[in-house]
Each structure stands twice: as C-alpha cells, then as structure tokens.
Length: 562
Image (cartoon, rainbow, N blue to C red; front, top):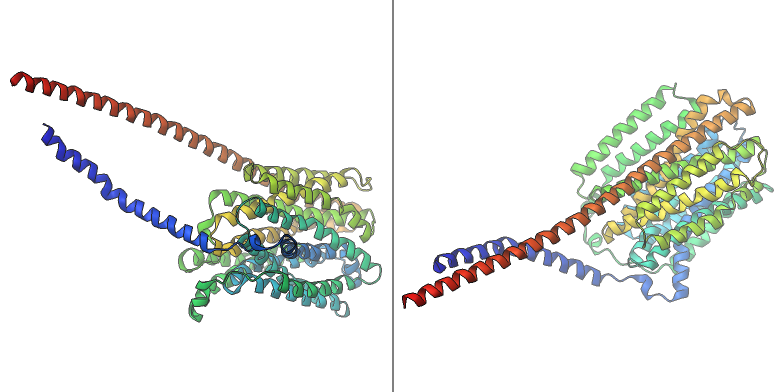
C-alpha cells in the first residue's frame, strides 16, 4: 500500500515543479533586469547641492510659467489688440487665444518623442529660442495686420509645446519616486497661476505705453532664459538605444505616419470648432474640416494600434485609472479656458474695467493656486488621486456656477472674487495628479511621452473648449449688438463651462466608486485566501492524523502476525 502510494506522491509532487519552475525563473529574470536598470540609472537631482537644485527646479518650472505668461498677456489686452486691428467679431478675438493653445496641445506629443530620441535638455533650449523668436514677430505684427498676428501666435505656441513636456520629462527622470518628486511637480504646477497673473500685469502695464512691448519684453526674457537653461540644467543620461539606431530605425521610432495623421486630425477638428465661431456652421468648409479631422483621427488610432512599431501614443500605458484621470482633466481644463476667457470679456466689455485692473481681479489665483498645488503635493502620497480629482472637479463646478450667475456691475468682492479663489484649486489639483500618475505608470525612457499626453490634454482642451463655448455664444447672442445680447452670449458660454465641469465631477465620482469597489474586492479576496489557507491546513492536519492512524493499525497488525 505504501509502495503504491509513493510513486504517485512523487509524481504529484513533481508535476507542479515542471510548470512552476520556468514561471519562477522568468519572474526572477524580470526582477533582476528591473533591479539592474534601477541601479544603473542615476537620479541627477540627488547629486546636486541645495542651491543648484533650487536653480535647476526653478528653471524647469519656467516652462509652465512662460506658457501661462503667453496666455495671460494676450487675454489681458485682447480688446486693446482687437481695437488696433479694427476687429469687432468676438470669434476672431477668440482665435488670438485659441490659436496659441491649439499648437501647444497639438505638438506636445511630437516634442516629447523628439526629446526621448534627441535629448530633453536640447529640446528644452530649442523650444525656448523658438518661443522668443515668434514673440518678437508677434510684436512686429503691429506694422502688418491681424492675420500675421494670429499666424505668429500659432507658431509661438510651438515653443511651449517643446519646453513643457521635456521639462516634465527632465523632472521625472531626475527625481526618484517620493516626497521630493511630488513637491517638484507641485512647484511646477504652482507656476501656472503665477505665470498667468504676471502675463496679465505686464501686458496691462505695457498697454499704457504700447501693447507690442508686451511681446518684445517676452522675447528678451526668453532669450536670457535659453542661455541660462543651457548652463543650469545638468547633462541628461544618454539614451544608448537611440544612439545605436540607424537613420531608418530612427525614422520608424519617431512614428512619422502617426505624427502626421495625429497632428492633422487635431488641427482640423479644432479649427472647425473655433472657425465656426467666426463664420458659423453654415459654411461648407467648416463641416468638411470637422469630418476630415474625425477621419484622420480614426486613421491615427489604426496606425498606433496595428502598424507603428513604436507608437507615439502609448496605448499600453492607458489603464482605466489613467483614462478616468485624463477625461476629468480634459473636462476641467476646458472649463477653465472658458472661465478665464469669458469672465475677462464680461468685466472688460460690460463693466468697463481697464486691462491693469483686470490683472488685479485675477490676482487671488496666485496665493490660492500655489497653496492648492503644494497641498496636493503633500496629499498625493497620503490619499488616492481619485479623491484629489473629485475635489478639483468640484472646485471647477462651483467656480463656474458663481461666475455664470454673476450680475453685471456687481461688486468685485462678491461672486467674482470667490470664483477666482475656488476655481484655481481645480486647476492646480488636476494637473499634478494626472502628471504624477502617468509619470509613475510608464517606463523611464518614455517619461517624455507620458508627460506629453497630460500636457496635450490640458492645452488642447483649453482651445477646444473655447470652440464649444463660442459656438453656443454665437447661437444665443443675436449678433451681440447690445449689451443685453452680449450678456446672453456670455451666459451661454458659462453654462457650457458648468456642463463640462459637471461631467468631470460625475466621472470623478465614478472613479472614486470604482476604486472603493476595487479595494473591497481585494479585501474580500485576501480574507477568502486566508479562509482557504486555514481550510488547507485543516485538511493537512486531518490527512496527517489519518496517516498516523493507518500506520499505527498496520504496525499493530504486523506485531500480531509476528
């Protein structure tokens, strides 16, 4: 009996080993590879002195600061620029802002991939120089017409499209995951309100003399920043894989078909919505651009899914959590773009405030935004990003409702002031949350792509949101001939912002619920495993006891026979 059971027991004990050993070996090999990569990588920020580290982070943060300066300086003196060119159509005025955000959101993905292949520091410096050049041309457009100015604004946006993702990638590669990295990203996000208000204030001051100086001063400052960043940013780790590639392999890795179709889809789709605010949807070419944009978008996704060997959009990194975060981010920042543009139009056009006073109106976003950004940096290590998003979407919703229901001529310290305080909490919570989640989710060599996706969603949503709101404004303002008609148009645009923020809030509630259910399932799974483990132990004890009973009976039988 024992001899018959032994071979079976040996066979049963050997069967799992034939399946489990290769699996264990593969897992061990994978862990060893990850450990070796972790050991080989040097986190640059850890080797810098505290003063040099401060200069390094501050320089990288200038990419977000200067991006928002470019947005704020035009928005503050929008009507001054419009009056100099004789622009009366509000749709044309929106292009002065939307064109800038359009190219930022469109070219960020490509810039991130170029940074991965050719160096993030190099792309950062080139982007700063490009930004300075087209800021100079934007100011010189005063001697031409508004078409050149819009053209310059569109090309101006390609500068931040290069500096923003590569700056984020440099931070992601320079800091190991932990509190320092969280605070570095929080500092980066805190530059958004500070840069915006600086742009507002500087443009308002220069408008007292001559508005082109707002852009010429930016060109001078950006030129100095380019030189300084070349010195203060440490040399980045060399991408050995990129250096070993042939020209053909480099072209394949850049995913040029994906870049071409993706850029075309984004430009055409956005152009259709923003141009519709100028000429209306009655024009055939607006519909054609929209349809072509959708078709190119379909082709882009097909290329990325089935053809590209190194897709520019890392769909493999898109977990359901990241998808929820990006959807909330898109809704929130589209709401913010509408809020900042139409709130400025309302108080300038209907209340008659000056550009410099408008900068003062928006100034509370600096302390509120910076406080929110650093609070998020502290909270992200302690609470789920789902709750951070929920708070941000709630802030967007409340801030939009306050300004949407604000009567004309109301004192500043009422709804406008509190709307400004609240809405920047959403702005400075959604961006660092989404960036950190994506930065920690993708492999280190694709930091530029991960950061690029977040920045693309943010900036493209601002431009597209203005197109949505402008379409509604055009439909309800009856031509905007009277102040009452203009107010109806502005209200319609604000309700679009409220709707987008509300959608983001609902998505964030679903996100929180999903995380809660996931935690409960995991907890039940652990408890079930514990119960099963106890049952297995009980079975083993019973089997062992039975074996001993059988053995004792056999021994007694043998003793009886002898």
